[in-house]
Image (tube, rainbow, N blue to C red; front, side, top):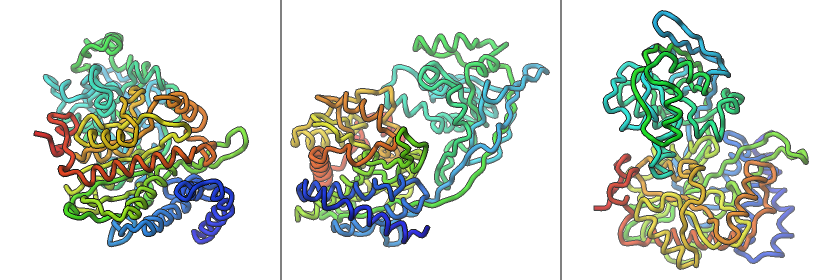
Length: 526
């Protein structure tokens, strides 16, 4: 079916619904709901990355940015920034053989290990001695010689660190980067206690050949690809006969003490083969020019994509509409832009409103934008990200992931307080939300960033659990769940935050010595 035909059907679905809700809501609430009604309609088929429906959604957002008085801020003077995507998956089971002395021990796919797809190196073939480097963090390489070796690491991070730092260090890309920096030629990831408890190896096997996505040119850890993942059974075979005992590693991990590290006295020979296809989706970007600080940009971001069409629910519904995740976040971003237009007062700094793509595929669109901004590199001073606010209850507090890492957090706190909302810590740090939303892409570009979520106060904890248990990434995430009064409060809150950051005298900087500011060389407080 042509995109034109899709657009006509989508417009018809929106128009058919308009009279009923317009009569019941005020003008501002109706405008907010209209965006969500369109983006989360069945005609959009869940806005999957690369789909014709997501292309229509991109055009809708561009049109609404124009209506809100923004100027195009995409590529080549347009609204869109094409993101060159790579979709990849394992094409076979690969191989993994351990050799101690002259005795080879082939490992069994699905029982001992699974091969991991590697988009930066579609045909991995590596053979080298194996060195165990604990969790693979920088400090654990002290005294280890891993040049030309395969590094084995637990798919976790050192205990005792803040939850956001731990979440970052446990990312395979981060572990591969560190291994490559020390001269390793490959990485074997190993299931640890935490992952075994939450998502054991056996449960991960059915997903081993699921398609992943990245962008062309993103070559994280390319010289030391993480090509295999071992469960407990495979790990026991890897450590068998070594001076380092697997049981001792698990015990140290459980006790949160330093892991034993060193050579395992075994050579691993492995292959991993990856199929790649290319596709394109677009970030959508509009700018509200500033006044005396127009050359500095505050990004307000929200992801436009969702997960498309999938398994039917009990009612036979297969369309994952994604109203809360994240049509309402995108709609809120558009309404913040409209409020700036209505205020008649331009901000001091320019504001970039960016609807990013492929968030559900691993923060791909935001990572591409942060690495390839459509404005001068170094001119983006902050990112405020809007992702899946659970607008089903009267919220009294706000979680701003990353707020405690830079002066941006104080601006967010003050703006929220003026709206009668207080900032509270992440109530579920074990879920590693810090690395699961688009602000993380800006953090990795050295830019102070926060991602806003509604807090657990009042009805919040129960309401969040209700949504996550019953509607998150389900066909039931539909428009009817949303309390539009709370939606308007969320828009007002984000307008206040955007205004505060844009009009502040000083640009946000990382707190002195902050882990992420130091790691990614961002602007640091003196």
